[in-house]
Amino acid sequence: DGLAPPPGYFPKNVLLNKGGYESLDAVLSKANIALSVSAFERLCQDPSVLILDTRAASHIAKGYIQGALAIALEGNFAMWVGELLADINQKIILICDPGKEKEALIRLSRVGYDHCIGYLEGGFASWLAVHKPIVQFEQVNSSEVTNELEQHSHPLIDVRKKTEFASEHLIGAFNIPLNELEKRLNELPTKELFYLHCAGGYRSAIAATILIKHSITNFIEIADGFAGLKRTDLPKTTY
Image (cartoon, rainbow, N blue to C red; front, side, top):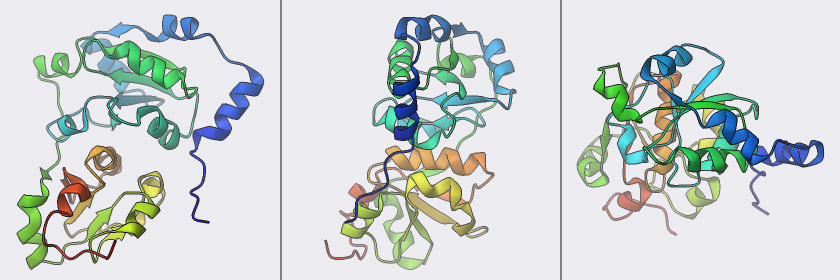
């Protein structure tokens, strides 16, 4: 009872195991390609190509490339790629911290995403160095937002799993698990400000880039998530 559905990539991997797949060496030979800023920018304009930003979640609010999906390599990277990318044959271009490109490619390949076509040479710093446009969103810590949440009834969207939410959450929070977010955008406030959080900032950074991709910008992300909110005096359900 209460067992969540299997991650979206499980059935895709079953088919790969039955039908076969390329060797890792073959995948890397096609994917481990450094792209100049100009070449990367041209690919960004192709609607069939996904920009996948693998930098730490804490860096994303300060700036990332318009249209990118940010899934940090430092966490459950491959699992969330498999959960959020419906097409296992999706063409992908990567933004990585320099030196992390091969690790990202291998971890993508472990769950069957073998169609990466290159990465931004020099990482995000090379994009900034030539003054290309970036997107930012507002981010606060739980200690900075406690008074605001006590005095005003802003909607609070919790993107943790249903089981995490059921265990303990802020009273008044609304649960939309990250893996359901894109299908439930119509349930979000359209004009009033709302706050967005997960357990510790990893998933809410992913959620923020999904929202912005759909032109939803009326939110503030709580960077330290429920781990920080739990330490405040805001009313919570009984654990």
